[in-house]
Length: 394
Ligand code: FEO
Image (cartoon, rainbow, N blue to C red; front, side):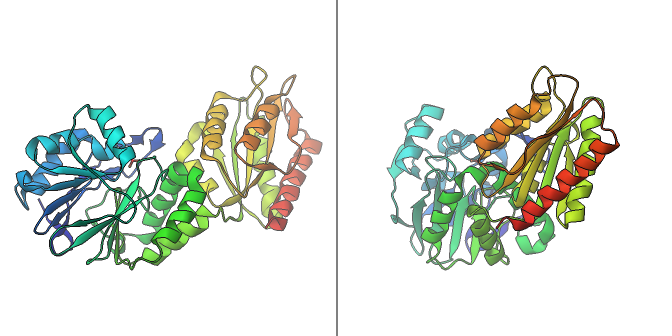
C-alpha cells in the first residue's frame, strides 16, 4: 500500500471506509476514515486503532513499515469503538505492548473488550519517551467522551487530536491543502455541529490549554490531516465554541398536504426582504446532520410542522429531539405550521426549542387548512419581522 508520511518516521496507517453512509445516525455521503498513526523511533508507538472490521487494513499498513509484533505502545486517545475496536486484534499481534490511556480510558477499554492489557495510565502533561522523540498527553474529558485525550509529538510539533478537528471525508489525498478547502471546511463544520456542539465551553477551554503548543500538523482521527490551514480550523473552533453566529436563518419544515410548505416559502420571502440569508429544508427530503451543519452558524431557526394527532409530524419530532441533545447557543427561533382543528403542534416545537437553548423570538404563526391571501401576507410579515430581529440580535 502507498506509504503516507506526515514527518520522517511518522505514518498514517488508518483505514478508509469509502462506503460508510451512516455514522450512528449522522449521514456521511463522502464516507468515513478511521485514522491511526505509527511513530517509528527507538520505541514503536501506534496512536489509536480503527473500527474492528478494518483491523486487517490497519495491520497491512503497519506491516508495510514494521513488523506489528515490534509495537511497544498503543496510545488510546479515545475508547469509542471507531478508534478502539481493533485494539484486541493489534494486541494479539503485539502482546507485549503497553496500552497508554487515561484512567477513564482504562475502565472503558476493560468494559468494552474484557481483556486486561498492560495498561499505562497517563495524566495531564505526562510524557512518553520514544527515544529521539517525546509524546506528551493532554486529557480532554468530555471532548467528547470522559476518556478523550490528545497526544502531542514535541519534536515534530504534531497534535494527534482524535475526534477534534475531524471530518467525515474519504480522499486519496491525505492533507488539507491537497483537497478542495471549501469541502474540507464544510465537512469539519458538519462534524463539529453533530458531534461536538454540546461541548462548546469545553472546546473553548481545550483551545486555551493547547494554545501554548507550537503546532505544525494536526492529525485528527477522521478525515484529512491539517498542515496548511491550521489557523483557519482553530479559528473556526474558537468561533463555534463561543456560539458565534452570522445573519442567517434556517427554516426546517414538513408538510402534510402542502399548506405548511407554502407558509415556509412566504416566510422565506419575508426573510429575504429583511436582508437576511435564508435556507430552506423540507425535513422528509433532508437529513438531520446536514441540517445541523447549516444551523451551526445560523442566528435564527424556524421550525414548521402540520399538526397531526395534536403534535408535530414524526420527521420534525426526530429533528427537535436531536437538536435538543446538541444544545444550541446564541440563537433565536419560532414555530409555524398549518392545522385542521386543534392546531397544537407549535406547543411541542416551542417546548423543544426552549429545551435546546433557543430563545423564542415570536409567537407561533398558525394557519387553518390552507393559507388565503391575508394569511399569505401574514407569513411574509412573519419572515420580515423575524429577519429584522435576527439583524438586531448581537
Ligand atoms: Fe470518532 Fe468519538 O469517535
